[in-house]
Structure formats: C-alpha cells, structure tokens
Image (cartoon, one colour):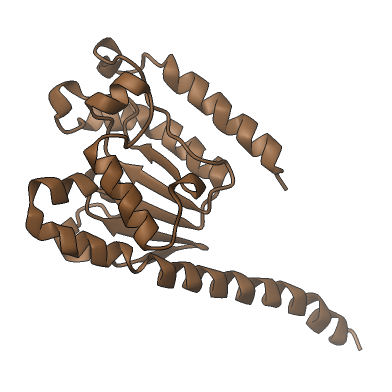
Length: 212
C-alpha cells in the first residue's frame, strides 16, 4: 500500500515534469504550465478543460471568476476546495482560451493518467465536455450532466464547466443543482466501500468453514 508521503512525492514528480513539458505546441505560448493543485490524499478529483489567462499567469488551476464560482459550488455541497484535487485535461493555456485540440489533449493524457493512478480518487468530477469525453465518448453534456456512473470502485460525475454559468445565466441553477448531489454521491461511495470491506472480511471466514 502506498503511504501518503510517497503519494505526495509522486504527485510532485508529475507536476515537475509538467512544468517543463515541451511535447506539444502549447509550450511555445504558455507563461506557466498548470499541473494542478490539492492534497495527494484527495478523495475527489475535478478535471477541467484547460488553464485560462489567470491560471497561465500564476500556475494554479481555477483562480479566475470560474474558479471563484467553483469554490462556491463545492462549499454549497459541504466540500472544502482544500480537500479536493483540481486539474485539467491540458496543462497549458490554449491561445486566446480556445478549445483544446485533440493532439494537445493526447499529449497531456499520460500526465492525467498518472495523476489519477497516484491519487486513486473515489469520485472524479468532469467539468466541461472535453474532460467528459474521456469517460463518456460521444455523449452530450446536456443529456448526462449530473448523472454519476460507476467505473469499478470509482464514481465519474459529468458536470458543466463553471464558466458555462458565467456565459449562460440560465445554466447557473442547473450547475448548482448538479453540485448539490455530491453529498449523496459521497454517501453511495461510502456504502460501497463498507460493503466491499465487509465482503473481504467475510470471504476468509467462509473459506475456512468450507474446509470442515
């Protein structure tokens, strides 16, 4: 079992590699790469699309207006921003905040894969259609937003990007309602974990009984 110190060191190593990455063309126009932020023990991972201007300047994710709204959404669900890990599918800002290109997403995929493997989060919240497409290829966010899907022991929850509410005011209550479901999803994860733990305790006893 990986301890918390080793997990933190592994996350720091990934972040260091991201900061000097030159795999795709985004490295030419960035000010800073944005690896992500949060504790290596986070149970919830939020995956956005790409850094914006503020994030590019400071090297931190979700610190502009959409980041402020995200913090409010998390707080409304009883979750502190300090206890989640936040990153994006691309770690460098696309010029003029355009959508990330497929080759740019592919170039960053290994970093996101490693972050997920190290964190091993119980819940992954995708923010926007580009992060959603990783787990729900071909789906429309307007159809499946807020609907959690189990992926092994993990729950994947597709949600609108917080910036969508800033551009389309009508989406704000929709996004707020989706985030309000997080406590219920956390409860489902807890029950699943407890059931799995009980099952693992029962199996040796049943096997032992079958010997007699």
